[in-house]
Length: 353
Image 1: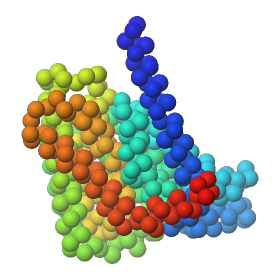
Image 2: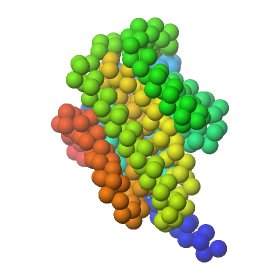
Image 3: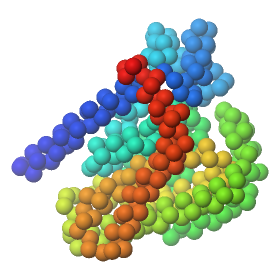
Image 4: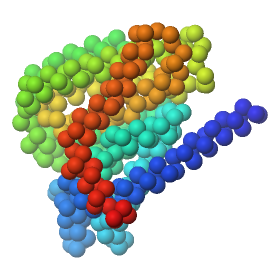
């Protein structure tokens, strides 16, 4: 009885601790009036509202219908952003509560990266928030619900279909490693021929053919190293977590994190299949960053208890894992887009100015 009351209080405290960050992020997002995609989507929205068209060739059917519906109920484009940003944050919040006992911390890490990119890339944000809620179904072996949600998310951004590859986590780890590593190597040498055909076959897929120009050799090498480091860190986090369970130093029941961490281990190999795409164009990195919260969950689970591991090797891995999170955010957001994106979002906010 007392344990149940204690757990309920902890859950309530986590909900309360998310209210202020949620409202703050919602106001930053909903109040934004200038970013690289703002005018484009505003023009599409205004065109659909004025003509009454239910779809537009430049966006997927789901996103187009959502624009049409919001126009029909009298919202302007800023009102549309109000609604979509609230929906995205609500979906992420719900997903984090289902995946970890530290949803408030994961929510703040999401604010660090990639929140500001989601403010700009509205279609991707909504689609990836739906995928985030599909992942718990996959972890629970409810594959049909996972497939249905991923397909639904592709109505807002076609590239979400990539996440159907996550069904490979149902394989044993040994078979998964073999299939994904061999598949990645094969795709590296054939993706330039296969991908244009596949994109032209998919609805709205033709828009992404322009991204297939190819990255520089230096960028390709850096992506290969990045994924190698990512898998290396995840593997060590899994080993550390298992050791903590074995010697009994986990302070609370980590059944939720246990399933999420094991999923992270398998999904790290599935995400290798992104490498051939990234060797062509860095824009596909969004498919990695959309599920980066899984890595954050693994890291925070260890850091909450890792101080008890008197092992230099694990301490160093934890240190480099934190560094990995920081450098990922810095490299893919703050180093090159701080002034033109992050500061611009604050400068052009109707609530802050």
